[in-house]
Amino acid sequence: MKALVLSAGLGERMRPLTARTPKPLLEAGGKPLIGWHLEKLAAAGVDEVVINTSWLADQFPQALGDGARWGMRIRYSYEGPDPLETGGGMWRALDLLGHDDAFIAVNGDIWSDVDYARLPSAPAGDAHLVMVDNPAHNPSGDFALDGDRLASDGPRRLTFSGIGVYRASLFERWREVIGTADGAERDPPRFKLAPLLRAAMARNAVSGEHHRGRWTDVGTPQRLADLDAILEDEARNR
Image 1 (cartoon, rainbow, N blue to C red):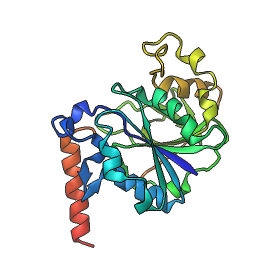
Image 2: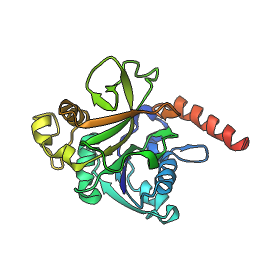
Image 3: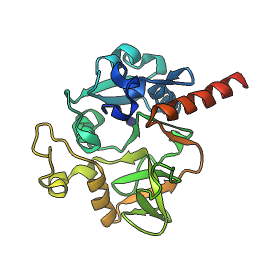
Image 4: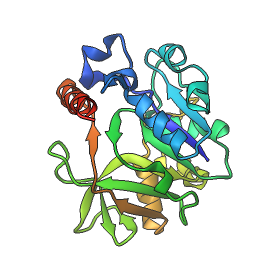
């Protein structure tokens, strides 16, 4: 199975830390955030990873190389100086990920104890998303989980973790869904992923699960410092 680690963001909320370092390369617990993902993906049997890049893109191959240290192959999808948003970045990476088999996609700026080996390798619909309890910075959640199906709205709203399994079929009608949104007519196009997910949910084509374990959206310097302290303390007490 292949995987995509989304790493093209500008990291503006993390300034000044991201002025010279892309957010996924910031360290917590003695290793880059993206390093935690690569270790877990390798342990789950993923042998090929695509990393999309934009801001300070040259630092990724310098830090991660070709993936040999994790027993995998890493390829890079450069988006240019302006990130293409999650939808555009994923769409651009499809030629490297393939158009036939499902792939895992993970936000490069999160940390969790989700076991990637337990994710479905062949979701029944267009996507399968891992949901978590709503954190303080997102109290209203993103999507509603009803059993194992996700909907745009409903009584049990949870937060999207940034971890999912996708099929290229999610993008088959992306122009129709996105319409004339700013950036959609660029080459390559720039667009958000959420409208495609909501359209697929309306077709009952998105499944989900509720992860009740550990998860951190490393969106601010304080959250990074807190995560680093926890992981360092755990390492000392092993």
